[in-house]
Length: 171
Image (cartoon, rainbow, N blue to C red; front, side):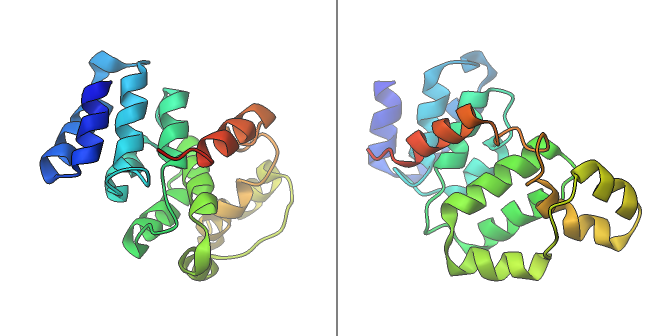
């Protein structure tokens, strides 16, 4: 753990590569060291936001939560666009993670790029999906469908509290 913290402080390209190696290493599955590595890649460390995107839907929920909460308001537009593309990826877990990361990033860039995506209502997601299946509108409405109950793994009260707690953390 201390090595991960030191790598974060060093902030070099070598550090970035090593933090990515630790974060993605299956040998550390379920270990806090992976969470610390992702955190070190984020706003509290190297601000290597491109590197964090793959972790937003990790099967390790704590790792995914740390990845989501590690995006900062200084996330560059290309990463924001990548997250927005994840909203329509067809993977609900990935889309939910991207949606929450975008909410935490906030700001004019997120708003501008999201407005380009589409707007929609709050109907039951299953009803909307079946009605627009196979149409161009389906991909445009996908981000809005994440608001529906049961459509977002991050919408439970426990996950909302976890994310709020992590979003307040600073090293």
